[in-house]
Image (cartoon, rainbow, N blue to C red):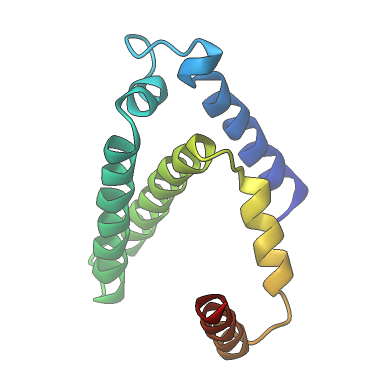
Length: 129
């Protein structure tokens, strides 16, 4: 992720923070404030919907669309929607995109299989204590 991407996510996260009810976000004037005001069920439902739309857009692209450019744009748009709604969830729980980036950086250089095995071992350890 280049620095400007990180800056864009940080700016969006700041806007989401400003829409929290505790920061004076008005559910009558802001979609984000409305979702946060309704609580986790509302924004988590949107995360699920957007994740499904990402899968559908990717499947459309994978099956050789007539208009590949439009299908690629649709996939990017759906992923943007998913990221946006997951950022609302992160904000609600006191987290930020920086926390996700830090986790991705922590995983950098690990094979996916090694990382998964490490998480399983940690889960087993946590269950035994």
